[in-house]
Length: 114
Length: 117
Image (cartoon, rainbow over all chains, first blue to last red):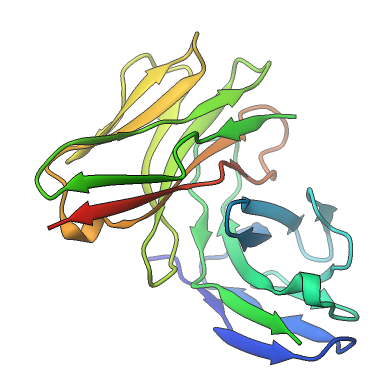
């Protein structure tokens, strides 16, 4: 089974702190994604990456950046955390191709910014 | 841009009964894929069922089936013989069949399904 591992299930940070959310997948997938999940808003795409060192903005990239130095690892960075970034963050990966390849998700990282 | 609408924020069904979750989407594309994902309280999002738009036959997976109406842009999920383990948030999602394939999914806002024992 494809496994997507998010390093932290729960984080509490202070406003202005730099936050790193790490995601690792073990199936050699080319594509990796970061979503933000908020009640009543569903999942919204922050950034995605289709190759090492490549990244594309999703629907809500403001306040976030990403890093993909290795194929298996995709990091989400909050340069200066703010309270409105308190949310659940979901990482996902998918193999290449235009078929109905399934997104495989990690367990999520719940971030609270005080 | 594509949009996905789930009009039912919450649904409740008795155990062993059948429930249908609604999903509509808006797109100008002819080639696309539709998905239903389930997110139980443990938070791991898992795939329930998927449908390729070019296939007329509705997808089924055991107790889960879809009613795909391409002209109406409707993609509902039917859960038969509901079980307590079906309680979860259910998300409908859309993916374009065009482009390089690196794009993500567009999700609806979700339906919270409650199973009454």
